[in-house]
Amino acid sequence: MAESELASKLNRQQQINDGEVKAAKVSQSVYAEFKEFSIQEIKEYRKIFVKYDVDKSGFIDFMELKLMMEKLGEPQTHLGLKAMIKEVDEDHDNQISFREAKLQYS
Image (cartoon, rainbow, N blue to C red; front, side, top):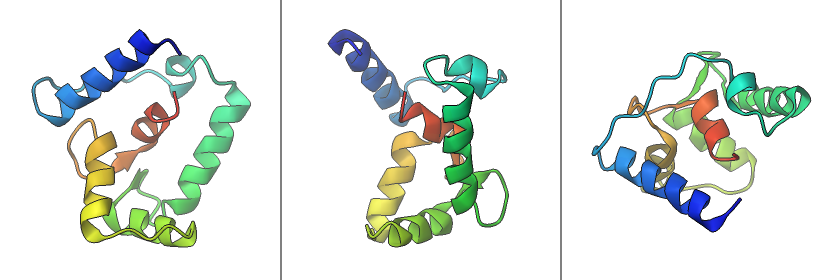
């Protein structure tokens, strides 16, 4: 990824986090949105996501993120977990959707 493209993505994410712009609601398939990944790769990412979505809500909430980080051997503080969610939570619902999680790996 070119430096300018990365800078642009980081700038957009910061604007969203600061509330300067609203995140776009995208209704398209994750397969169409993340063309740089094969269908098999996206399925593998989804399998990992679903593993930690304990309540099967389609989102990773605060407690699920806490448990996930503990299982990965990287326990976080309360503030650290809140910061992790805020960093990727485009729609400010205090939980992480598969799409929001996937954006971090694009």
